[in-house]
Image 1 (spheres, rainbow, N blue to C red):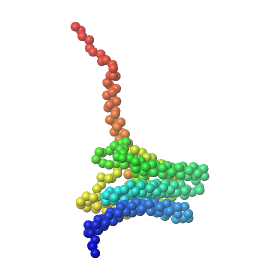
Image 2 (cartoon, rainbow, N blue to C red):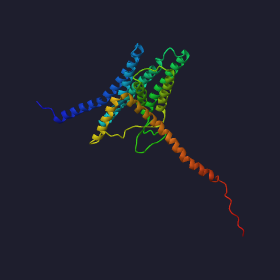
Image 3 (cartoon, rainbow, N blue to C red):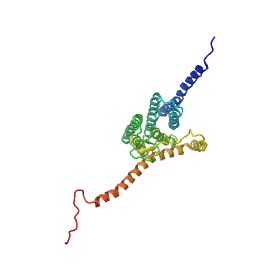
Image 4 (cartoon, helix red, strand yellow):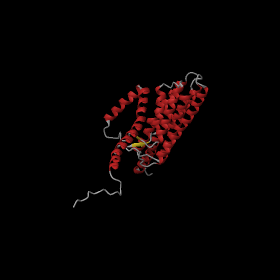
Length: 304
């Protein structure tokens, strides 16, 4: 009776381990999908809840916020373990369309427009709800368009380039846009909008997030943060402190972080436009003082 070849057994064990490593990023993606599904179900529950709608809406917002680090980890783990695949990329895009597209657009619609009181003018109420449904749909379209552009773009560059040694997203990423909406709902503890003028502001916020996703403005990606260094103890300690503060004061911290990130892209675009106009002004003044091309400059006449 011949024994098992040790080299062959070792190769088979490594192959099984390799197949198991491919499942690890997909588990985080599945958690992302589960969070999106949970958010949608909680939003639907808020519709049929008599006096507990705020609780369900807050849970729906928290689920979206939890999905954001899950979405970030699946890609990082796939790159760290060298287990990236086309299947994983497609699955991640579909998960983002559900969790950061469908779930926040439904949450924004229900939270911002469904619970407006009957004391509001009926005609105004009808127009607000119709406009809310349309703008939330545009947010969804902007999100899936952002995902499609990201999938087909290779080394895309923003219209307002930043530092050469830093990496940027072209347009606001869909998790950040969804996080802006979810953080706002969580900031108010899920208590739905009761004033018509707040609904108008909410229309602007949702529409702005949808526009920023399809824009070509730069947003910081954070990809230069390297957790695979030999001794990242200082960074890990800092991240642990930040995580504790976020968990302890989640409503204020997450809302503030979402606002800062959203306006960072707007500020970067405004600063770039301002600096470009400032550079063009001296050139325009110089061109105005120079004689037009093709004209002869009069020469002084000789008196000889």
